[in-house]
Image (cartoon, rainbow, N blue to C red; front, side, top):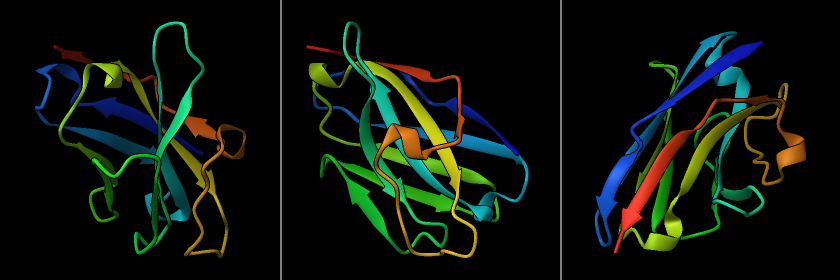
Length: 125
């Protein structure tokens, strides 16, 4: 089992940048493929980005964002650039154990087993 804690959210002006972090503890971080999702007020939670266990494969819903991981530091990152007011949401990291599979990513919420508590990102216009 893995525990996930997000940080790095806050208030930023439109056009600015933020880097979110997700610290993992418990079972070995590199065991898990990881993803970022977000949920805006009154909307369903949606996929943002995903990364494979090895970090060599990534997948995005938006090219302004970059997902990365440091398996030595047990940390997942989301670099967000050119932020827009519509990016305002609670951002969640999530983990799924894909066993021996080092290269696959997952993009659907139901495919993930573990979730953090979320970090709020607010983009002002």
